[in-house]
Every structure is written in structure tokens, then in C-alpha cells.
Amino acid sequence: MELSEQSRAAIAAALQEALCRYATGGEESVVTDIHLQPNSDSGELVIYDDDDHELSRTIINEWVEYESDDFYAVVEPILRKEIESLKETGRLDKLCLMKPYSFVLVDDEKETVAELQIIDEDDTLLLSGDLLKGLDEELDAFLKDLLER
Image 1 (cartoon, rainbow, N blue to C red):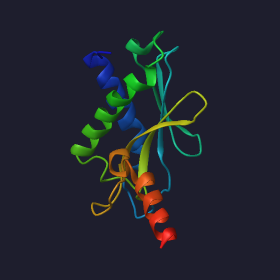
Image 2 (cartoon, helix red, strand yellow; image 1 turned 120 degrees about the vertical axis):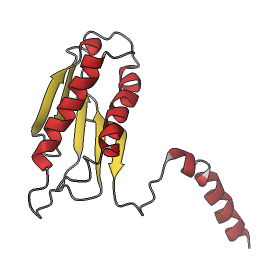
Image 3 (cartoon, rainbow, N blue to C red; image 1 turned 45 degrees about the vertical axis):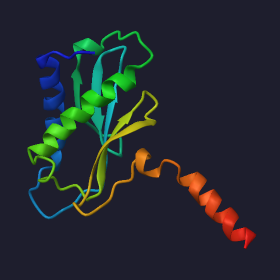
Image 4 (cartoon, rainbow, N blue to C red; image 1 turned 180 degrees about the vertical axis):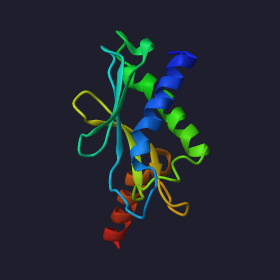
């Protein structure tokens, strides 16, 4: 799915509006994650916190009446790219959110579809599927070998 510049700007503006509530003004840290809930029927992107308080809302024209079953798979890289762009400009560094926090893609039932971005201190290792691939088999082989001795 190719988004227009207007739609990309709408996503960026919605993210910035949502994050402006957490702009640093003091030392107070808020514990929350940011949830992004796109809707293929209405084209809406709703952004809210852990307590389901709506932070921002916008309409993405290309998402309205999207018919394919791969909606979240198509939307995920788009949202990830916009969040990465905010991170690169340093806008995520100036928030009063307690680290680690994450941007989470959720479906209509508010179930997690994907972790879009985890923001943490620079020295934290974030585990990915590629890093953990084959770990179960290695642990099973190790345990089997250990029990046989």
C-alpha cells in the first residue's frame, strides 16, 4: 500500500499530538506504553495510553475500506517508519515516559499485533525473533545431554 504525503503527514501529526502530553516539563515520569489502533473499515488511526485514554485520532484515506486480510501486516511497516523517524529526530528522547516504554500496534479488540518500537536506555539488548531462533532446540539438546550423564 502506497501512502500519499498527506496521509504520512497525518500519521506524523497524530503521533506528535499524542506525545505532546508527555513532553518534559518537570521530573515527573509517567509509566505507560503508546498503543496505535488502525481500523481498515473507517480508516481511523487511534492512539491511546495503557489506561485507554485517547491521545490522538486521525483518518488515513488509503485505509478506508481496505479489503485484504493482510491489513496489519501492511500497516505495521508504515507506522514503524513514522515512529523511527520521530526517534531519529530526537523527539522521543524528551518525553517524561519512564523507560522502557514501547509503541504497540493493536487490533480492534486491543490485542497486541506487534511491538513497533521499544524505547530504552542505549545499553539494553532487545531480543528479537532472529536472535532466539533455535533456542528451544539447543536447550532441549543441552538438557538431554545433561540428564544422560
